[in-house]
Image 1 (cartoon, helix red, strand yellow):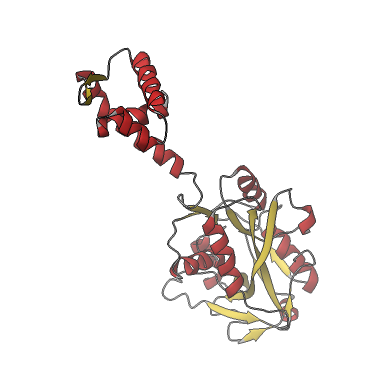
Image 2: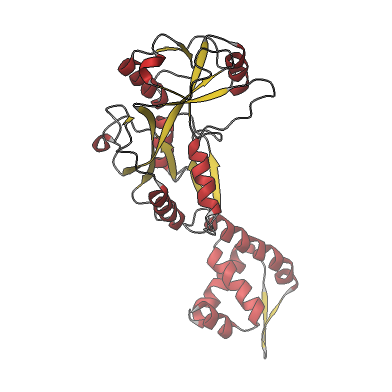
Length: 309
């Protein structure tokens, strides 16, 4: 059904005059007549009766009017769902307990009057594919390839260098330490069952282990955060690594310890990825916000993999 014809029908019904409907729609009266005639042919009924005072709805026209308004409202909702500035900005944050999710929450609290649709995709490959297809607008990822090797049209900016911390149970040999160096972690068992080969976070921790001679074990199924915390809390020999911004609720009695890693401090390089031709105004606002809050850690003795940029 021609929505322009339906819109014209509603305008004539509201004004009661073909001429006034034409002025409202910024078209000629002849165009209004043609649209109404075409709609009546499609429906097989007369919608208006011409009178000396204008146009009056027929019984069929009265029956069709509420449905016509429903059609027009549905069309507007459909257009708004994809219209930049009207629809929600869709952002991938990797995980809802990780630092990028906190960045998005801080952006929302900062006051922009915009809707956000926060999602969690699996890895950078899936995120880039979703950005290219328009399924999402942006993603927080560690970019393991040089910028020039990103797919055409995909842009990236490093927005957060997140310090990595050691997480231990109360009986671990390093539990009482205020800080540890990467060299001191050599020889200790670091258990990270969530490292999946081929992902950007697996690449990061593989390079970290190689750089400092660490032993990172990935054996055993990944049952999620709570079972990992249970195991770490009860083990005198196992520890794990977490981002400084990773949030979790430690069960009472676990006594988990977060120990800062220093000299140098390994940082996880979060970047924001987006399509360069995406005109969504909230995306521009998000990028500006991230640029304003990024701390400068370049002179603080940090370590990142060689591919980080």
